[in-house]
Amino acid sequence: NAGVTQTPKFQVLKTGQSMTLQCAQDMNHEYMSWYRQDPGMGLRLIHYSVGAGITDQGEVPNGYNVSRSTTEDFPLRLLSAAPSQTSVYFCATTGSNTEAFFGQGTRLTVV
Amino acid sequence: LAKTTQPISMDSYEGQEVNITCSHNNIATNDYITWYQQFPSQGPRFIIQGYKTKVTNEVASLFIPADRKSSTLSLPRVSLSDTAVYYCLVGDGGSARQLTFGSGTQLTVLP
Image 1 (cartoon, each protein chain N blue to C red):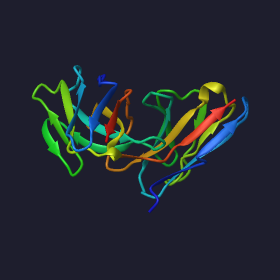
Image 2: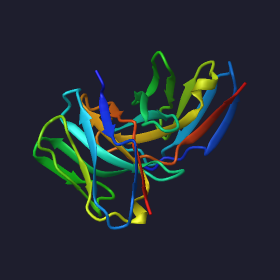
Image 3: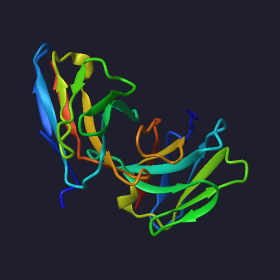
């Protein structure tokens, strides 16, 4: 039982490049979300999904797209990376509505 | 959303009890108080949640006074492995969905 799996763990992009951060969960949870964490700060919500086919914006959605075609997967896309998107990205899932389970994170650097 | 205030950092020694206090003066009637722990290079992990009085689990205790304007996370007999950032969150109904993180408290346990 892997829980929440994020790939890749590390990534370096050039400004303007695009990429997809992958998130997969085997907990059969309906709710999934993406957060970013900048140095010395708490996590901020980017996008979330309450189930397959349904997504919505969080606090800091600009520059990111998401889709949810299956319960298990919730990829985060950066269409044109910018240095301001250098951060650590965490995917999370929630089932019981009380506890969130986070992945190990993807450390992204945009140069 | 109720804003939370925590100390930026705390130091303790192995074997001591550690109490981290969080202020949330504007807490709403439906809000629950939740604490997460985050180790370096990992996603946050749920520790404990409460609404009022005292809650205890195998990891920690949470003390909430009658006015609910503050809460205290108590970690008994800390070890070096408890060195982490601890986040206090306040949210409607205790939902783990759209979490709002502050900057947290960096706890350093010294030998």
